[in-house]
Each structure stands twice: as structure tokens, then as C-alpha cells.
Image 1 (cartoon, rainbow, N blue to C red):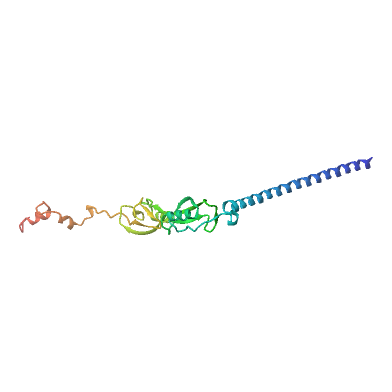
Image 2: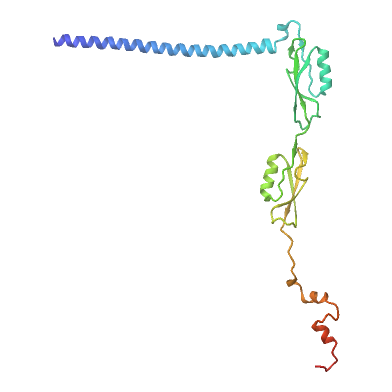
Length: 236
């Protein structure tokens, strides 16, 4: 009986192990299938995007049949760029203005698609036009401590020069600015910070020399000096 009991328990244990192994294998298989499906979807999505960009947005000339090569429009004025595209059988899809430190205002600085790519007749080309140099307003930094004002201007994009003068502002603070705060300047531009060396010394009457005080009195004004000058010698 003891042997039968041991065999029954052993049989149940083996059946349970087989079920666990089967369940683990099934879970591993499901996880592997999920990974493979996810990878397949990612690869498929990338391939679809690539094919769409290659054969729909910017297809090669041989895939188009009748096609137009995009001309080089960079550095052309916008009116001439429109005319070039019109003659090629294309058009301007849209334009966007961007600051540019070197190109003249209204000239093409970038295009999409690039020159040499193929488009269907009548398709549009997007153009970026120079808006000229970037323009900034001079911030109002009057009364600011010199180091703080210098940091703000440099971070904004201005170049800075400094000078000093006697002013009502406390020493070390901005008394004046050139150009004036609020004026619009093309970048790069220079702003001069005029730094106060402190207010002028106040001169009070108490500090005037006695001689300077006497110079302001007219003869006969009743002063002690006038009285002494009117006495005869020997007169007490």
C-alpha cells in the first residue's frame, strides 16, 4: 500500500510537470510570435513609408514617364524663380520667409525638392525666401547693474561697448544707452552702455571759503570790514 501511494504521488507529480512544461512552452511560443509580429509591422511600416516617398513624393524620372527636372532656384529673386518654374512646367507651392545674414531680402535661400529631382508636370516647389538680417529691439536696461545689463545684451545677440560719465544713477549702473532703448536694430548691432561713475558732488554754502563769501558782499552792506574801513585812525 505504501508503494502504491508513492507511485500515485509520483504519477501526479510527473503529470503536473508535463503540464507546466507544456504551458511554459506555449507562453514562450506566444511571446516569440508577438515579437516577430511587432518586428514585421515595424519593417513593413518603414518599407511602406520608403516606397511612398520614393515613388509618390519624389519618384525617379524613369518611374514617372513624362517628368520635369526641378531647376536650381537658390539665390534667384522670387519673381525670377516663379518665371523659371513656369517655363519648366512647374509652380510655386508655398513660400516662407526666414532671416538670413547674407542673402538679399526676397531671394531664394532653400528649396524643396532639391534641384535635379524629378516631378510630374504642374507640381509645386516650396521655397524659403530671405527676410534679410534679423531685427531686434534694444531692451530697456537703464538703471541696471553693469554686469547684468552686459549679460542680457550679449545673450540677446548684441555686441556691447561701454563708456563712463558722471550721472545721477548710483555708480556702476547704466545711465544711458546708445541706440536708445526700444529702437529696432539689424543684427549684428552694437549697443553702447554708458555707466555712471556716481552723482556729482553737492557743494553747500557751509563749505565755501570765507574769501569766496566776502566776494559776494558789496561795500557799505553793514559788514564789520566796512565799519572798520570808515573809522579814522586812532578812533576807538
